[in-house]
Length: 144
View 1: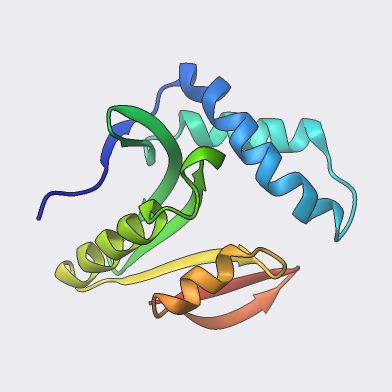
View 2: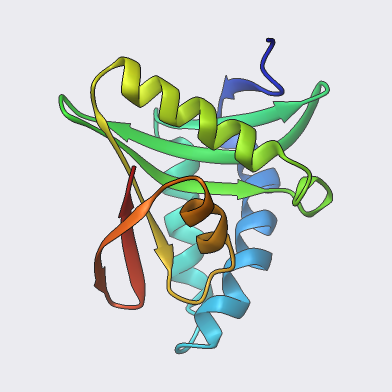
């Protein structure tokens, strides 16, 4: 079955696509727990977009979201996953995460991610079999 998405490497010019998706998703979650530091968050995402492990998630030839992955000898860690509002709750996240789980299994590596304790995406991760392994600083580390 063909994938429901494609990936392409992110470039610095993708910041203007990635930043508003991140800001609009994370600012309300962060502000519920403490102050939002716009400058620090802006730098965080600029650095993430410039990272070699960052990709643009594409669906139907359109940019649909972005992600950042770090892979080591024993671990695949999904550092960031953000979908554009227009494609949320339509199966793209499930499709991508299922693909990531299968990829990690083929490589015999654990797949981990972090999610804020108040992020609704946590329910998706739990539904897909991710289990909480630790909680610190309002973030839950989950492993599949």
